[in-house]
Image: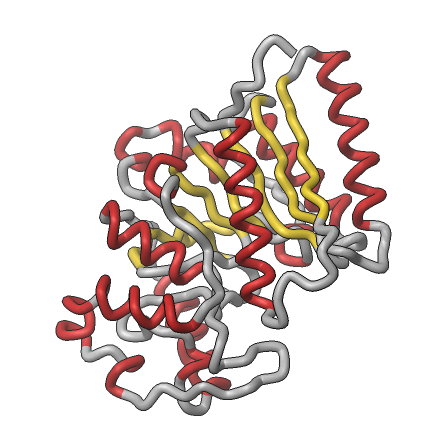
Length: 296
């Protein structure tokens, strides 16, 4: 290859994703070719799995190499393999480590890359991406491009990622509010109605929903963290004005720190929340949600 310059890096952790990988990689190929003109990289962090995830990734890497030679495209792929027995006893900490490892490699190999997409490689992104032009328009128009620094999207049949979502008056994790199940569905209903009734980007403090695109320059000095203490500290520092204006539920209520089995509330928060809050605090990042659906 004459150049390793790429326009976007598709990043994410992979564990037990074999049944979804063919469809997810197909979607990446469609977006990468349509939006980024085959100048993109895929950077994944593979954690030990009992399925064929690693074999599929390695086979796909060979296919990309053959495609580059045949068509003179500039598609790159990097597989970071975790050889450690256990990264952390806490799931969000392990995922944060994986996402940070992807970004570290991206900075090393593609320091000038203007955009990166952080995504999950499972069910939500395995539905067909039928309309990549929905994503393309956010780059084509200067007015739209200036409206966001991080952009995620609605999903069908509902907005599902309430864990990563912070939107006034629900600035903190629903898992740290009493009766978390009730809050989950209440917030989900609010988001579905909000996104259904607008054509504009919706501002928020944090959102992911399985797939989000970022302007690298705004997030270059930010880190993912699954640590509850970091999130509380940054939430208080960053959102004091919002707390006063909106009487946030998160601070009007007594926070709870429960063990939900897969989430240890005393030690864990969603890794996306501190990532977005750091960017807001340091750079005034515009975190936005599009009402459009990419994967249907």
